[in-house]
Length: 276
Image 1 (cartoon, rainbow, N blue to C red):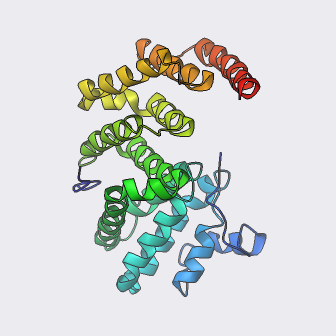
Image 2: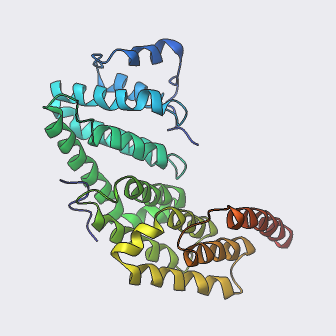
Image 3: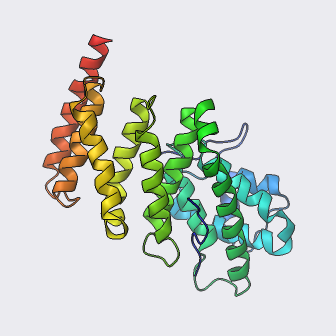
């Protein structure tokens, strides 16, 4: 399934060796007119971003990137690749990665007019690179489950950010397809099932709006894992939580469900460790 049309109309991004937040480097963010001298310098700023400092520096990084690309448009593909690789470093980095993508792809309305075309070009390049990785998912998965889950998780996080924006609805269908790809693999591992369940808790309510039949198919496959003797207790617990969460309309207002399964999951993991 194609990603064409995508975006039109707790953890930190893993730091590069020798880079990371420091008072001198972060203080440069306070100057809105700062333009990195090179792609390597832009990378240093990228790898200094964390969940904790993103609210302060995220928008400034987005504007800094667009300013850099305005004077160096030929670096757009390289910049998009740099951001993408940082975002999919692991499934834990993807939420921050999606926030970084949003800062670059959708700058504030008060930003310079020329940034609109620059941000759209960046968006097109990043989506094209992500499409290539998605198309190669079977080969990537065979080499590294973690690498594949980074790609899947970024798709989910991008959709969480942009599901209501024009052109992103089709991404939901890609996520449903990817979820079925995961669950239909004979050698599907617990980490993959966990990844699907955790993301569907976040975005399942939005996926229901575009393809309720597709979501029902995924949930049916999860039910099968609940009753399968081959499933670990951890997988059964994760699947049951999502199924019950969905039955409640993806709401847990009093946190009773979350609290129950938090304890249940700890017990399930402990039991699995005892058995294996």
